[in-house]
Amino acid sequence: MEFGKEKIYTIPVNDAFQEDSECPFCAMERKLEEDAIAFTLGPSYMEDDVRAMTDEAGFCKPHMRMLLAQENKLGLALMLSTHLKKTNKDIKALQKHSPKASGLFKKNEESPLEAYLDKVGNSCFICRRIEGFLEKFFDTVFYMWKSDPVFRDNFKNCKGFCMEHYSRLLKTADKRLRGKELEEFCQLAGELYIRNMERVEEDVNWFINKFDYRYKDEPWKNAKDAIPRAVTKVNSILDKQ
Ligand SMILES: [Zn+2]
Ligand SMILES: [Zn+2]
Image 1 (cartoon, rainbow, N blue to C red):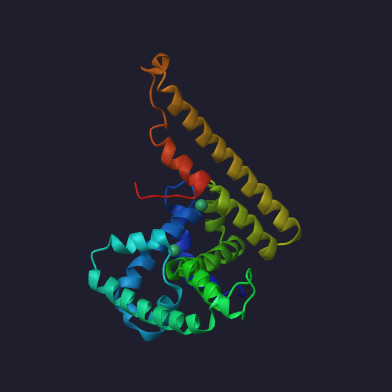
Image 2 (tube, rainbow, N blue to C red):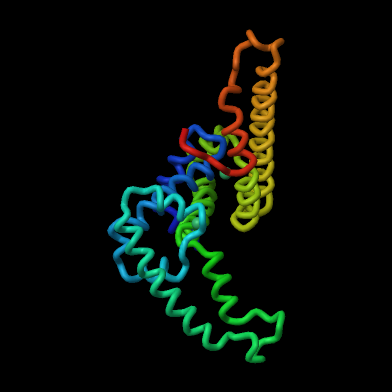
C-alpha cells in the first residue's frame, strides 16, 4: 500500500493514541475485535462474499467464545449452518480420496484431507479481518508520523507499547523510513518503550510491597491496577476496565 490511501485510517489511529492505555496498538486491536464480532453477526454477514469467507475460514476458539457470548443467536446459527454445510461437503469429498491404506499416500505424508482439516482448524475469519486492518493502521502511523506534527506529539506522549507491538513497530519502521529518519524513530520508540516498561515494573513492585505489613499504611500510588497494565505490556491483553 502506498502512502495516501492511509487517510481513511487516520481517525481510528488518532483515537487510539488519545486513549489512555499501555499500548495504543492494543487499543486499536481491541476496537477492531469488537467491530469484527459485531460485523460477523450483523446484517453485512448476510452478504454472499462475507458468508463465503466465514464458511471457508471458520473461527478460532477465543473468537468463537466471544461470538457465543453475544445475544444474537440467529446470526450465529446462520453462520454455523453454512460453515457446517461447506466443511461437511469438502471433507466428504476429500475422504473418498484420502484413505491411507489405499497406498496413495506414504505413512507420514500429509494427505489432502489432513491438510484441509489443519487449514480450517488454524484459520479464523475474525483474526484475519483484524490483521488486515491492523497492517494498514501500522502503515498509517508512519504516514501520519511524516505528515502530521500534532500526531507526532501525541506519539511522543503516549505510554509506550507492549512487547509484540513494539517489535512490529520496528519492523514496519524498517520498511517505511530510511537513513537518519529511521534512526531517530527507532531511538525515540526505544526510549518510550523502556521508560514506560520500567514505570510498569515499578508499579508491579509497589503492588507486591502492599502485601507486606510494613507498607500497609503507605499509599497505593499507581499500583492498584498494576497487574492488568503489566499484562497488556507483556502479553498484549487489553480488556475493558
Ligand atoms: Zn500492544
Ligand atoms: Zn480468531
